[in-house]
Length: 516
Image (cartoon, rainbow, N blue to C red; front, side, top):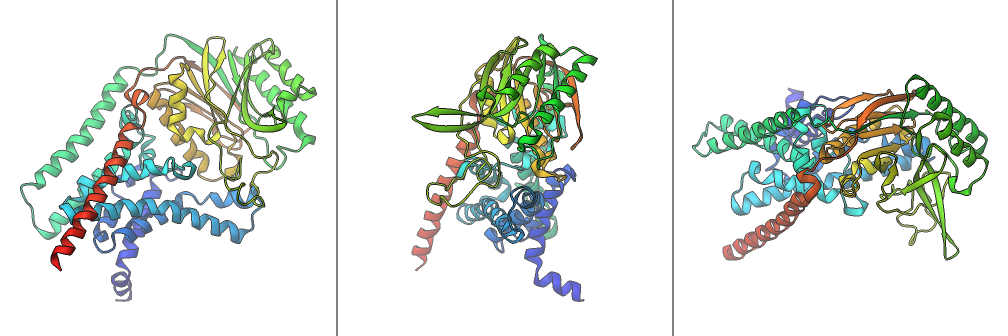
């Protein structure tokens, strides 16, 4: 009796939160991806009661469960007080949950104004909200719903059409359609027009699967030209990474791992992670000379991460960079990180609150770079530094500049033994599908990997392992619709959603005025 009473009194909150937790189960490291196709059904049972609050609490529980690792970053490596860390974490979850609430509230308003069913409106509104989240306030498109399907090659091939948003659209459509049929069965109110829902659901889902079969039959991973690449995972402890006393030992470890890798099999390109050289490489001192000598010893070109700086008008610009060295030790190019991490690499409110500092020690505020492909012997590489891999427009811009290979160098040591490194990898592989290009990923503590243009992870390391990984990878990208139009479709969805909501509000206002 008490349980029934508790459920009746809190039915709305329980079902909304259940949807959020079920969504979280579909992402790494739980990886119950099937949950994503059913997770929102409990929310739909209560959406009419409190449309904004329902979406908000679903989003809050989802992000709270999926982003728990934010506390590890802020306390363990940011040195933040546990209380303030937890407060910041809750604020982040509240902010991200607003997008869920806005989508469900908008769908409810469109239903009230025009009679549009949720299965028809919410997929468009949800994609619009995810797209808005990808760039508003610097953008944070982490764990978009479509990423939950990263392990299913058949399902993710449509990313070369409309990006990860194609999967998000389909997931919301299926959830809303199934909820619609649950309501029909419960109310015993089957109508002729319900057949349209069946046709749309089966048609869209089948089209996505058959498109995946079609794409995979075209052997998207095969290329005429290839190279033998090595990624080196140094596993340098974050607590000593920037300590000058350990800099030489760090380079010696990377050199040893590189030499051991090429001793087994000759390599064309060796890749070290983000900030593998934890000093200003362009200062040209002893440690820089040590790095310059390594390509000759391993007889391979070397791509590695290191901070850099430029002096302009007597002011220094600090850069999070990737350098490419020839076999002779000559610098072939430098690529600088474009999308910086707020509070990690720069203080976004520094102009207004100069007393606020970054959470990451070692380097001052970084400045953003621009798209600069790095020319190696057999082609050009586009470098995605750290969480740039979750921003599809950066990878797209590199391939449009003629890059034959994408390289993701990162330092996921910040995340500890959490699900974040696995989430990061799951999002990175979509960049390969969207642009039909190979990706070589070198991470300091893992997960290092080679990703084929189909989204197949050819090989990967564990986390917090000291090792290297090698593979024969293809060169060259293939033309895709996504590479041509980018995020034009979700941008149109956002525009149409805004117009539809404005029109709905105006229509409801007119009805209210006429009723007086």
